[in-house]
Length: 260
Picture (cartoon, rainbow, N blue to C red):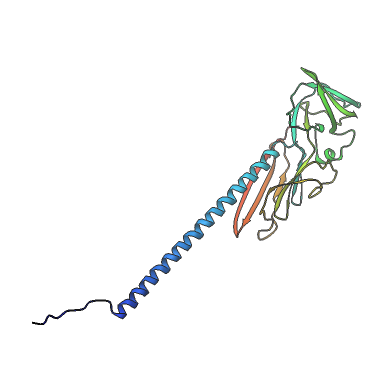
């Protein structure tokens, strides 16, 4: 007897439906993979911005904490101050008349420091940066002796006032941090100027990039609130970073010593 052989396989309609379904699955998978890749990239960029911001905040904060009391001044996108490297208590001080030295309790100076100034009772920034004689700031030349040290000045100088706690400071020349364009730069070795420059002339060291000073309005990267009898002075850092349309804002308050 003849045997009927039944043929099996895909019809054209079934093949088309299979191709369409596979196409939909592949398109969905591609979209999922693409979205996952974008999300990973965004997270990586945010982490990069966060790390950059934290390092920048830490560097500026560390130096601001050593700022001489009443030496901070802010103009435009710049902040300027005297970095204190040492200090002690004086035993005698030329206030009634000028002298080229005074005695103090001995102290140590860091080997890396480049001391330029002796400061006593810096009662305001105007007198400090004007460098008048009498005044609060004299040029420093050296120290010798222990346990009583002799602090030598560059020339005869008369300090304007005694400090309430007989404290004096040794400081380097002023430094400035300025946002120029989208760069945060640190400036040094430009001397002491009566008027603040923003930015000052001199060598600029790049600290950070991609900082924005416009975020729906003008952004002030530095603000300063002078100290009072009840609290220390406060510097607020407001840094906003932008890389490839990813934003991050880091705001930090730095308390600056207020002991004169």
